[in-house]
Image (cartoon, one colour):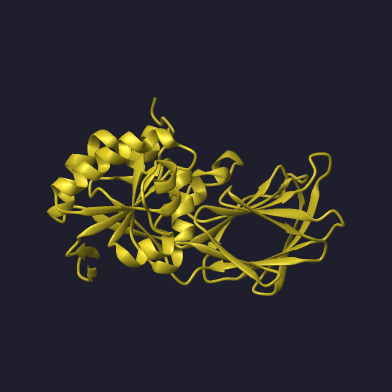
Length: 288
């Protein structure tokens, strides 16, 4: 697989790796249809191991799959795509999202649109968006997030105290239910429900949004992504770190998590006609 530098497109595409939504054996029929449509245009499909096992097929580990194919196909909803992006991140491989969920901010191709999209795909009528990722470092453990890293209280009966620094300099202390550190892509996720701003997804910026802050003076903050942000738990109850709403880590009193922009981007395959503001209009029902 090679990248067309001038167009940021793939060339000589021969294969795709498919990852299905977990615990959904009913997706076997959808996979067979996807396989047929891809084969009709000369693209061989291979299944990720857990997806294959779920529907009684043979498959490959995700690492092996990423080394074998030209791009990945996530079949499910935005949650499935989030997981695929994080797990395949080190391979820097493009991902196409097929939406079988409900909201579909990230997965914009429905099953009934796939055949037409792939016809355009073969004609190089598509685009690859480079989306900012963030990297968290906690007690020598590092992880990446596509949407957000959330620092949250452990118990619903008490609030949490968090001290924050930017490039080593103190800038705020949060007291409330927690703090969301979001990418622009993730601005339409938990950040939005917590009252944070929407940020155009191809922007490189951090969004720091307090969750139910005790003080009314605490407000969301948008800042350039070339800073490193550090959060320290200042009370004795500790906290939990939640990555993209899926992976959870514990953090103790006086422990810190450092967050910065990841060195590489997530790469999402989209229709050329996909427009972010049309998506907002449709999903958030603006103008209705």
